[in-house]
Length: 279
Image 1 (cartoon, rainbow, N blue to C red):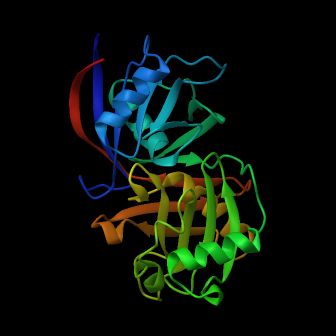
Image 2 (cartoon, rainbow, N blue to C red):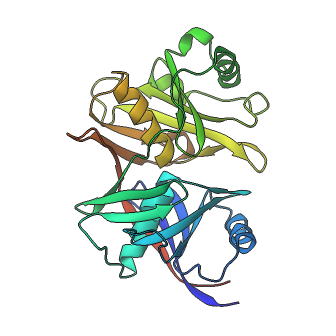
Protein backbone atom coordinates (compact mmCIF):
# COMPACT_ATOMS: atom_id res chain seq x y z
CA UNK A 1 0.00 0.00 0.00
CA UNK A 2 1.07 3.56 -0.73
CA UNK A 3 0.27 6.93 0.83
CA UNK A 4 -1.52 9.04 -1.77
CA UNK A 5 -2.71 12.68 -1.77
CA UNK A 6 -6.43 12.93 -1.06
CA UNK A 7 -9.10 15.62 -1.01
CA UNK A 8 -12.79 15.64 -0.19
CA UNK A 9 -14.62 18.31 -2.14
CA UNK A 10 -18.12 19.71 -1.70
CA UNK A 11 -19.53 20.42 -5.17
CA UNK A 12 -22.29 22.73 -6.40
CA UNK A 13 -21.99 24.95 -3.35
CA UNK A 14 -19.78 27.80 -2.16
CA UNK A 15 -20.66 26.95 1.45
CA UNK A 16 -19.06 23.79 2.85
CA UNK A 17 -21.38 20.86 3.62
CA UNK A 18 -24.37 22.16 1.64
CA UNK A 19 -23.53 20.51 -1.70
CA UNK A 20 -22.61 17.03 -2.86
CA UNK A 21 -19.39 15.57 -1.41
CA UNK A 22 -16.79 13.84 -3.56
CA UNK A 23 -13.72 11.84 -2.56
CA UNK A 24 -10.73 12.44 -4.85
CA UNK A 25 -7.57 10.30 -4.84
CA UNK A 26 -5.14 12.55 -6.71
CA UNK A 27 -2.74 9.76 -7.68
CA UNK A 28 -4.48 6.57 -8.75
CA UNK A 29 -1.46 5.02 -10.47
CA UNK A 30 -0.96 1.32 -9.70
CA UNK A 31 -4.49 0.79 -8.40
CA UNK A 32 -6.61 -1.80 -10.17
CA UNK A 33 -10.36 -1.56 -10.68
CA UNK A 34 -11.11 -3.78 -7.69
CA UNK A 35 -9.07 -1.58 -5.35
CA UNK A 36 -10.73 1.58 -6.66
CA UNK A 37 -14.18 0.07 -6.25
CA UNK A 38 -13.44 -1.21 -2.75
CA UNK A 39 -12.26 2.21 -1.58
CA UNK A 40 -15.26 3.91 -3.18
CA UNK A 41 -17.64 1.58 -1.37
CA UNK A 42 -15.80 2.25 1.91
CA UNK A 43 -16.16 6.03 1.62
CA UNK A 44 -19.96 5.69 1.69
CA UNK A 45 -20.23 8.67 -0.68
CA UNK A 46 -22.18 8.82 -3.91
CA UNK A 47 -18.95 8.98 -5.95
CA UNK A 48 -15.18 8.75 -5.68
CA UNK A 49 -12.64 9.58 -8.38
CA UNK A 50 -9.06 8.58 -9.12
CA UNK A 51 -6.80 10.89 -11.13
CA UNK A 52 -4.31 9.42 -13.58
CA UNK A 53 -1.96 10.67 -16.30
CA UNK A 54 -3.83 11.28 -19.56
CA UNK A 55 -3.69 8.73 -22.38
CA UNK A 56 -5.41 10.82 -25.08
CA UNK A 57 -3.81 13.73 -26.91
CA UNK A 58 -5.04 17.08 -25.65
CA UNK A 59 -6.16 15.84 -22.23
CA UNK A 60 -4.75 17.43 -19.07
CA UNK A 61 -5.55 14.47 -16.84
CA UNK A 62 -7.57 11.26 -16.83
CA UNK A 63 -10.22 10.46 -14.25
CA UNK A 64 -11.92 7.20 -13.37
CA UNK A 65 -15.29 7.72 -11.69
CA UNK A 66 -16.86 5.20 -9.33
CA UNK A 67 -20.12 5.06 -7.43
CA UNK A 68 -21.10 2.32 -4.96
CA UNK A 69 -21.01 -0.96 -6.84
CA UNK A 70 -19.89 0.22 -10.29
CA UNK A 71 -17.74 2.48 -12.45
CA UNK A 72 -19.34 5.33 -14.40
CA UNK A 73 -18.25 6.59 -17.84
CA UNK A 74 -19.19 10.14 -16.84
CA UNK A 75 -20.72 12.07 -13.97
CA UNK A 76 -21.07 15.81 -13.44
CA UNK A 77 -20.24 16.55 -9.83
CA UNK A 78 -17.16 14.26 -10.00
CA UNK A 79 -16.04 16.19 -13.09
CA UNK A 80 -16.18 19.58 -11.38
CA UNK A 81 -14.89 18.26 -8.05
CA UNK A 82 -11.97 16.40 -9.63
CA UNK A 83 -11.01 19.46 -11.66
CA UNK A 84 -11.20 21.65 -8.54
CA UNK A 85 -8.93 19.20 -6.67
CA UNK A 86 -6.50 18.93 -9.61
CA UNK A 87 -6.17 22.71 -9.85
CA UNK A 88 -5.83 23.09 -6.07
CA UNK A 89 -3.02 20.53 -6.11
CA UNK A 90 -1.09 22.61 -8.66
CA UNK A 91 -2.42 21.27 -11.95
CA UNK A 92 -1.74 23.55 -14.91
CA UNK A 93 -3.84 23.12 -18.07
CA UNK A 94 -2.24 23.11 -21.51
CA UNK A 95 -4.65 25.72 -22.85
CA UNK A 96 -7.36 28.14 -21.85
CA UNK A 97 -9.78 25.28 -21.20
CA UNK A 98 -9.10 22.31 -18.96
CA UNK A 99 -9.60 18.99 -20.76
CA UNK A 100 -10.61 15.92 -18.76
CA UNK A 101 -10.31 12.41 -20.14
CA UNK A 102 -12.95 9.96 -18.89
CA UNK A 103 -15.12 7.09 -20.06
CA UNK A 104 -17.17 9.19 -22.50
CA UNK A 105 -14.04 10.74 -24.03
CA UNK A 106 -12.73 14.28 -23.61
CA UNK A 107 -14.77 16.76 -21.57
CA UNK A 108 -13.98 20.48 -21.69
CA UNK A 109 -14.06 22.53 -18.49
CA UNK A 110 -13.87 26.31 -18.30
CA UNK A 111 -13.21 28.70 -15.44
CA UNK A 112 -15.86 31.36 -14.82
CA UNK A 113 -14.02 33.25 -12.12
CA UNK A 114 -13.83 30.91 -9.15
CA UNK A 115 -16.62 28.75 -10.61
CA UNK A 116 -16.01 25.81 -12.95
CA UNK A 117 -18.31 24.67 -15.74
CA UNK A 118 -18.15 21.62 -17.99
CA UNK A 119 -19.44 21.27 -21.53
CA UNK A 120 -22.33 18.80 -21.51
CA UNK A 121 -21.36 15.63 -23.37
CA UNK A 122 -23.62 14.43 -26.19
CA UNK A 123 -26.70 12.51 -25.19
CA UNK A 124 -26.46 8.81 -25.98
CA UNK A 125 -30.23 8.37 -26.23
CA UNK A 126 -32.83 11.03 -26.97
CA UNK A 127 -36.55 11.32 -27.56
CA UNK A 128 -39.66 10.59 -25.50
CA UNK A 129 -39.72 7.74 -23.03
CA UNK A 130 -41.83 4.65 -23.75
CA UNK A 131 -45.32 5.19 -22.38
CA UNK A 132 -44.93 2.09 -20.20
CA UNK A 133 -41.94 3.74 -18.50
CA UNK A 134 -43.85 7.00 -17.98
CA UNK A 135 -46.78 5.17 -16.40
CA UNK A 136 -44.41 3.22 -14.15
CA UNK A 137 -42.53 6.37 -13.10
CA UNK A 138 -45.78 8.19 -12.30
CA UNK A 139 -46.84 5.29 -10.09
CA UNK A 140 -43.43 5.15 -8.43
CA UNK A 141 -43.43 8.89 -7.75
CA UNK A 142 -46.98 8.79 -6.43
CA UNK A 143 -48.37 11.27 -8.95
CA UNK A 144 -51.08 11.08 -11.58
CA UNK A 145 -49.96 10.31 -15.12
CA UNK A 146 -51.35 13.72 -16.19
CA UNK A 147 -48.99 15.43 -13.70
CA UNK A 148 -46.06 14.48 -15.96
CA UNK A 149 -46.14 17.36 -18.43
CA UNK A 150 -43.18 16.20 -20.53
CA UNK A 151 -40.63 13.38 -20.53
CA UNK A 152 -37.46 12.34 -22.38
CA UNK A 153 -34.42 10.14 -22.32
CA UNK A 154 -31.57 12.03 -20.60
CA UNK A 155 -28.89 9.38 -21.14
CA UNK A 156 -25.34 10.77 -21.13
CA UNK A 157 -23.61 7.79 -19.48
CA UNK A 158 -26.01 7.32 -16.59
CA UNK A 159 -29.31 6.26 -18.19
CA UNK A 160 -31.44 9.04 -16.75
CA UNK A 161 -35.14 9.10 -17.55
CA UNK A 162 -36.28 12.72 -17.24
CA UNK A 163 -39.80 13.80 -16.32
CA UNK A 164 -41.22 17.30 -15.80
CA UNK A 165 -43.92 17.84 -13.19
CA UNK A 166 -46.34 20.75 -12.80
CA UNK A 167 -44.31 22.72 -10.24
CA UNK A 168 -41.26 22.82 -8.01
CA UNK A 169 -43.54 22.32 -5.02
CA UNK A 170 -44.81 19.06 -6.46
CA UNK A 171 -41.20 17.94 -6.98
CA UNK A 172 -40.35 18.77 -3.37
CA UNK A 173 -43.40 16.88 -2.08
CA UNK A 174 -42.45 13.58 -3.77
CA UNK A 175 -42.06 10.49 -1.61
CA UNK A 176 -41.12 7.85 -4.20
CA UNK A 177 -41.83 4.14 -3.86
CA UNK A 178 -38.50 2.32 -4.05
CA UNK A 179 -40.11 -1.00 -4.94
CA UNK A 180 -41.73 0.50 -8.06
CA UNK A 181 -38.69 2.50 -9.25
CA UNK A 182 -36.15 -0.24 -8.48
CA UNK A 183 -33.40 -0.35 -11.11
CA UNK A 184 -34.32 2.99 -12.71
CA UNK A 185 -32.40 6.27 -12.78
CA UNK A 186 -35.10 8.95 -12.69
CA UNK A 187 -34.62 12.71 -12.84
CA UNK A 188 -37.52 14.96 -11.92
CA UNK A 189 -37.79 18.68 -12.65
CA UNK A 190 -40.43 21.32 -11.95
CA UNK A 191 -40.55 25.07 -12.56
CA UNK A 192 -40.25 27.44 -9.62
CA UNK A 193 -42.86 30.13 -8.95
CA UNK A 194 -42.01 33.64 -10.07
CA UNK A 195 -39.80 35.64 -7.75
CA UNK A 196 -37.61 32.77 -6.53
CA UNK A 197 -33.81 32.87 -6.72
CA UNK A 198 -33.77 29.72 -8.89
CA UNK A 199 -35.79 28.71 -11.95
CA UNK A 200 -36.26 24.96 -11.45
CA UNK A 201 -36.19 22.36 -8.67
CA UNK A 202 -34.51 19.06 -9.52
CA UNK A 203 -34.41 15.69 -7.77
CA UNK A 204 -32.47 12.58 -8.82
CA UNK A 205 -33.33 9.01 -7.82
CA UNK A 206 -31.12 6.02 -8.62
CA UNK A 207 -30.49 2.43 -7.47
CA UNK A 208 -28.50 2.32 -4.22
CA UNK A 209 -27.14 -0.38 -1.96
CA UNK A 210 -30.36 -0.50 0.03
CA UNK A 211 -32.95 0.23 -2.63
CA UNK A 212 -33.69 3.64 -4.07
CA UNK A 213 -31.24 6.44 -3.25
CA UNK A 214 -31.43 10.20 -3.81
CA UNK A 215 -28.45 12.20 -5.00
CA UNK A 216 -27.92 15.61 -3.35
CA UNK A 217 -26.82 17.47 -6.51
CA UNK A 218 -26.31 15.82 -9.89
CA UNK A 219 -24.25 17.35 -12.67
CA UNK A 220 -24.88 14.65 -15.29
CA UNK A 221 -28.65 14.84 -14.83
CA UNK A 222 -28.72 18.64 -14.91
CA UNK A 223 -26.59 18.59 -18.07
CA UNK A 224 -29.00 16.22 -19.80
CA UNK A 225 -32.08 18.03 -18.51
CA UNK A 226 -30.74 21.30 -19.90
CA UNK A 227 -30.12 19.73 -23.31
CA UNK A 228 -33.67 18.38 -23.35
CA UNK A 229 -35.48 21.38 -21.82
CA UNK A 230 -33.67 24.05 -23.82
CA UNK A 231 -33.97 22.04 -27.02
CA UNK A 232 -37.72 21.57 -26.47
CA UNK A 233 -38.33 25.21 -25.56
CA UNK A 234 -39.25 24.28 -21.98
CA UNK A 235 -36.42 26.32 -20.45
CA UNK A 236 -34.56 29.51 -21.40
CA UNK A 237 -31.00 29.48 -22.70
CA UNK A 238 -29.74 30.40 -19.24
CA UNK A 239 -31.20 29.27 -15.92
CA UNK A 240 -30.36 28.15 -12.39
CA UNK A 241 -31.51 24.85 -10.88
CA UNK A 242 -31.83 24.06 -7.18
CA UNK A 243 -31.26 20.52 -5.95
CA UNK A 244 -30.88 18.79 -2.60
CA UNK A 245 -33.48 20.88 -0.76
CA UNK A 246 -35.30 17.86 0.66
CA UNK A 247 -31.97 16.46 1.90
CA UNK A 248 -31.04 19.64 3.74
CA UNK A 249 -28.61 20.80 1.04
CA UNK A 250 -28.63 23.98 -1.01
CA UNK A 251 -27.13 22.88 -4.31
CA UNK A 252 -27.07 25.37 -7.15
CA UNK A 253 -26.38 24.42 -10.77
CA UNK A 254 -25.89 27.12 -13.40
CA UNK A 255 -26.89 26.13 -16.95
CA UNK A 256 -26.11 28.15 -20.06
CA UNK A 257 -26.24 27.58 -23.82
CA UNK A 258 -23.53 29.55 -25.62
CA UNK A 259 -23.61 31.11 -29.09
CA UNK A 260 -22.29 27.88 -30.63
CA UNK A 261 -25.05 25.79 -29.06
CA UNK A 262 -22.87 24.13 -26.43
CA UNK A 263 -24.46 23.78 -23.00
CA UNK A 264 -22.26 24.54 -20.00
CA UNK A 265 -22.98 23.16 -16.54
CA UNK A 266 -21.45 25.27 -13.79
CA UNK A 267 -21.15 25.22 -10.05
CA UNK A 268 -18.98 26.28 -7.15
CA UNK A 269 -16.75 23.81 -5.31
CA UNK A 270 -14.98 24.00 -1.97
CA UNK A 271 -12.28 21.79 -0.41
CA UNK A 272 -13.36 20.33 2.94
CA UNK A 273 -10.70 17.69 3.69
CA UNK A 274 -7.09 17.49 2.50
CA UNK A 275 -4.46 14.93 3.45
CA UNK A 276 -3.18 11.46 2.62
CA UNK A 277 -4.92 8.13 2.16
CA UNK A 278 -3.19 4.75 2.27
CA UNK A 279 -4.14 2.55 -0.67
